[in-house]
Image (cartoon, rainbow, N blue to C red; front, side, top):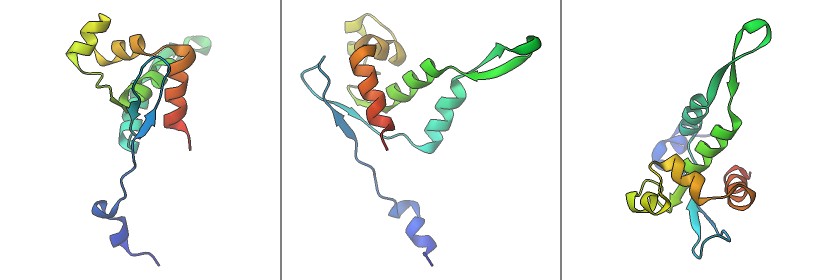
Length: 118
């Protein structure tokens, strides 16, 4: 039988960040694996009320927003909160910068694939 001590936080192994080379940039970006708590918070932010059958309101997951929040929350390098980086792209905010820096056909799919790979 396993000892509860092996499950204490101090004994938890840290996951290593993922380095990913994108064609758009000379240097690799760095991604982290988010925690279960962060995952739940992101998912909660992405539900929207939508009118369903017979006019009833239904909670529906906005998958586009979900994927963008999940991916942008995983980016460690570059720092998407950096004001100079945001200014260089003419945007304000982490989400807007993420949308401007990474294109759908290449980068966004690679980032999502890297952080969801099991």
